[in-house]
Amino acid sequence: MEVHSLIKEYQREHITIWGCRHMKDTKKLIKLNPNSITFFSVERLFITYITYFLGLLPFLPIPENSMQMAMLTKELKQQIGNPKFAPKARFLGKLL
Image (cartoon, rainbow, N blue to C red; front, side, top):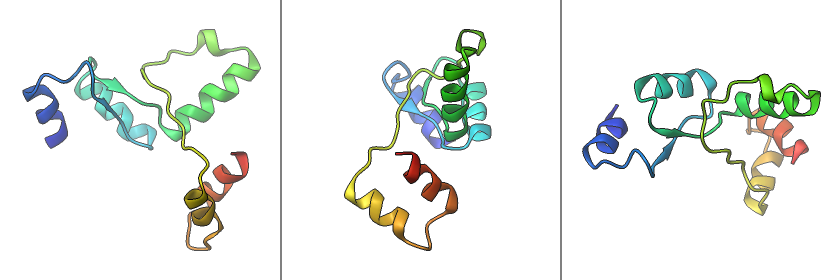
């Protein structure tokens, strides 16, 4: 974990936001350093979104500190239209 060692070495835990788009990897990062600032994975973002609409959000523990979403840009639209692009990303594009 080179990034983790750099964050610790230069004492940037309080200002560096890191994470992964996969929930299992984000959990590993939180376990590695619970004091670091992490962003939501795609799965956690959908879970949080659904629990919000169901009224269950107050009962959901949220270990992440920052919620960031992809912005809909021309480049993203072009990638979503590309047949080589992953089906999950095309689905995400339809939601945006």
